[in-house]
Image (cartoon, rainbow, N blue to C red; front, side):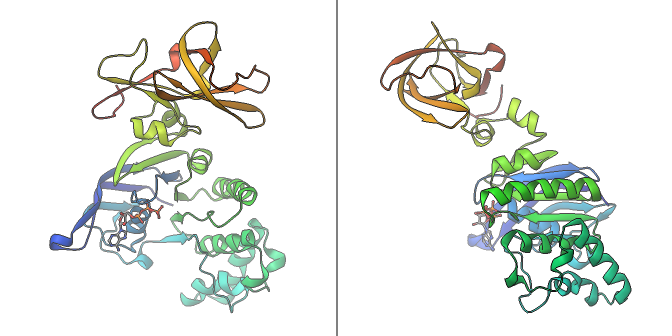
Length: 334
Ligand SMILES: Nc1ncnc2c1ncn2[C@@H]1O[C@H](COP(=O)(O)OP(=O)(O)OP(=O)(O)O)[C@@H](O)[C@H]1O
């Protein structure tokens, strides 16, 4: 097991006038046994960051440490990591057992020890009854568990996950999330998990790295990121529906954007005037979409609250202790 340290990590692709910098100096200290999620929109550089830790991409600048070693110039096989991919990358002609055992056979581990490690991993992942099957005879969720099993048997210092749940349907994804959490509790292996899905990030992470266009916008616990977003980008990326960001609001500060989450607004007798547009029914709650001084505003209300008709003026009050302010120029939290 090991800590991971990223120091001024930079990635550039291409050379000369085709050079493109996609990671702009990322710094992060990840503790031994921590479960870290790297989250951000498509193209923000999260896979590139993970692949640099794995050794699948060269590091253009800075330093990556795993445990007490600088790994910049080490081959993937020398880094003592195991990676789980989105597409599982299982060998179709091999049984589940052989898929899980393959990496160990290559390392010439004695068969008895291989058998013991595979059996143990299969037990943890509830795959014991499927060891003779071929990948095509498995469901998507089972294939994903085989891919995790193959990583576990190697007993690495670090697990790297690249969007491993994105091929699963919503229900299976939620279930597999719980399994990954359980696995982490049992094995306690330092993990880096990449996803573009903020719900996945919030539910899995002990701490999360929020990336935007090659920059680390924030590194914190899900609570910190939700309650104290470091920028308007984080405020609108984390939370569903996103935080309302208002330039033009009564009680606002000059040069600042006022932020308030839809769940921190109450419909009241007086307060901000919102013209309603539509109401969305989500089961236990409803979302009122409207406009406040021309800016879009979403208000989340409970199931039993009265629902306004479209094109009507309602009043809403922000909970004062839940207001956020961001610099209108830089977008950074004030
Ligand atoms: N081999 C490459 N050559 C040039 N540019 C690349 C290469 N690989 C990735 N990029 C660029 O680097 C940036 C980051 O890509 P990366 O795949 O890390 O993003 P991502 O956040 O993982 O996105 P996604 O969620 O879509 O996979 C993108 O702008 C991408 O176009």
